[in-house]
Amino acid sequence: MRFKLFLCYILILSSISTNAQFELIQNVYNKEVKVLNGNWRYIIDPYENGYYNYRYEPFDQQKHPWASAFFLDSKPQSPSDLIEYNFDGMDTLSVPGDWNSQKPELLYYEGTLWYKHSFDYIKQDESKRCFVYFEASNYKTEVYLNGRKLGVHTGGFTPFNFEVRDVLREKDNFLIVKVDNKRLKEGIPTLNTDWWNYGGLTREVKIVETAANFIQDYFIQLSPDNKNMIEGYIQLNGNNIANKAVQINIPEMNLRKKIKTDEQGFAKIQLKVRNIKFWSLENPYLYDVIIEHETEKLIDQIGFRTIKTKGTKILLNDEAIYLKGISIHEESPLRDGRAYSEEDAEQLLDWAIDLGCNYVRLAHYPHNEHMVRLADKKGILVWEENPVYWTIDWENEATYQNAENQLSELISRDKNRASVIIWSMANETPNVPARNEFLNKLAAFARTKDSTRLISAALEQKNYNDDPTIRTIDDPFAEVVDILSFNEYIGWYDGLPDKCATITWKIAQDKPVLVSEFGAGAKQGYFGDKGIRWTEEFQEDLYEKTLTMLNKIEQIQGISPWILVDFRSPRRVLPKIQDGWNRKGLIAEDGKKKKAFYTLKNFYNKK
Ligand code: GCU
Image (cartoon, rainbow, N blue to C red; front, side):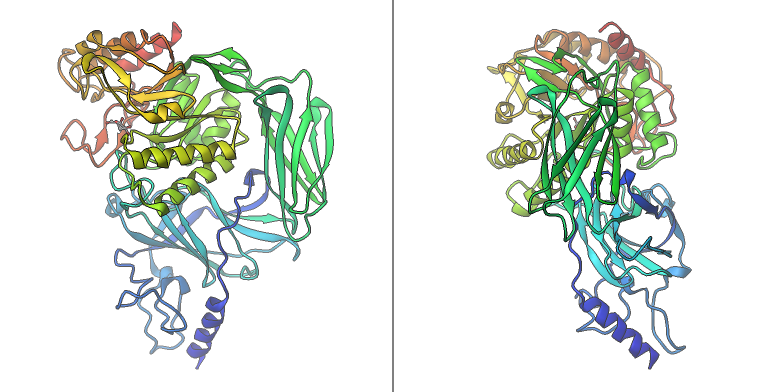
């Protein structure tokens, strides 16, 4: 009898409509949050047996009143009941953290894995609203709280949140999350990538509590056209947000301004400022910006600077800069697996600073927010990238929407970070009509979301007039981007390092050039003649010859060689040299620096 009652309870719950994904909450750093870090129970489910019945139909409580769906966390109500799973008897995974690096049997796992976390929650008061906020989860995530589906998110590197209205209770909440990291032809990224497909709750999960009517979003940056004007907007959320007073206060500027929201709870910001301390490389100055609305007081640390191009120059606060960069994958130095913590970010950025960098290219997907908030503090410029990588399903409208959603979430999260200067639309994608249309749409969308930053992408190149000694950019997207970037591997995939001396570059467009990748593989500690591939000397020689070649490009305004640290890739299988690692790092995965690290460091020191 009790089991039937239990099922009735589930029937009622699941009949309540599920919440769609909620607009992203800006800056949860300053919200009252309950972080759900820790050991979560998990079930590996390659056949998705916890989601489909034996006829491969999704469990539907109306049609199949079985308790076998994992998201119900069913318990036998009597000794005769049949339940063929039990989270509470399972092993645990640490959250945050990819699953691949935590269990040997999960290193190559690609499929569905279910997580369960139990927690109590006491709201400050009944008027508060609660959201479950995921910093990232790779790749497709379905979220259930106390048996109720909150929603679905696709994309492995950007935050998302769901409102948990009346289903959150004080005791014994169970949050069950289905994560599926299968690579998909129609995915963003698609089936083929040169990085490890880390799956799972790779970053923090937290309960965010807000006022009934709260500051859901804001954009506060220096106008690109007027260095004495701070512009942007505030967006409130709730059912009483029209014609409301919001106050912006920047104490250090003796600036306090009241603005009023419109019928939609939206208010534009225009603040005239004088004698502002610009955020710069030498002085990455961050102001406390306080936004107040009724009972809520939100503080963010924001740097004010302008970034633009003029002819072939990149101007930071109207001064030309050279981007002394390095490309970085989001892998935890020394621990293994996806990086997620402030310590991971500190280590990676400190290595970049040690290399002499003032700029990092965060490849090939949005990294965790610690990277950009630390870059703000350290005075490092940042290229952030949407994972539109290699051979995307360009003709598929759902694929475009997925790419646009992920880009929207990235821009939404980081639009107030001074360090972020470039949004990259793609990496090494083929110059075909469907791709050109896809990227043109994406660039136009990015510019509507944020007109204060520059757009780029790793473009295609070819021999100039079929002359193999002259290279040029061969890509219509070059007319759309603000900065011309391309990856080149002369001396590694294309001839040997001596070939660099035979090549010149002829770039037609009057825009800055930023070489987004070059490099060579080397096994750290393998020394020998520079003519022997995989030795540190080969890599060192390629860097010396490439830097000489690229320095001749008159429009060149920066480089971000591939790559700071060796990184895991299933495509790299050469025994005793690669063993599942891409060896183009200047640092090995154990932190040991290679000879080419010092070649690049010396080059930057002379810049
Ligand atoms: C490409 C690509 C990288 C890849 C690199 C390599 O340029 O952008 O993601 O890892 O080449 O082949 O090592």
